[in-house]
Length: 139
Image (cartoon, rainbow, N blue to C red; front, side, top):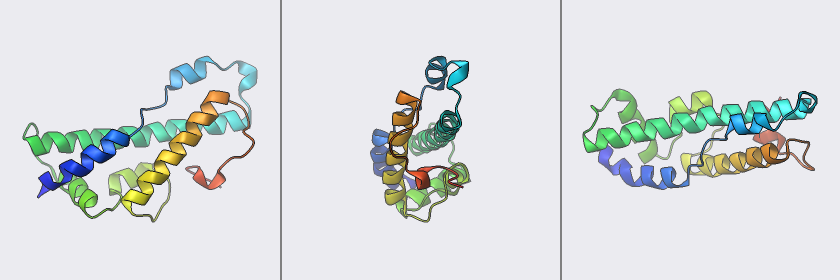
């Protein structure tokens, strides 16, 4: 029953951060500011925006399917099943960082990663400490 997912969607949508404003972030940079660290932080932020958008879009579509505003598709049913089984949806995993965590642990981790991205894009310089394994591609 996909309607059982509504409570879970409400929980995650209520906590899901807004996308990072890449136009505003890039507008603060001069040509000389583009150091390797700044480039990595911009790449990470752009990839995080892709993930946040995919999550927001798919959960919104599922909500519309639950209310009857959209026909329920296989993707919606798969998302509902993933949410109810506490698993990361495969469509999210395609644009996310590698992880074997359950959905609830993965989402808590996502919030920490967004927090790091926000800190990076505020300062746009090398931080005193960087969570290397918190990158999309930590290699």
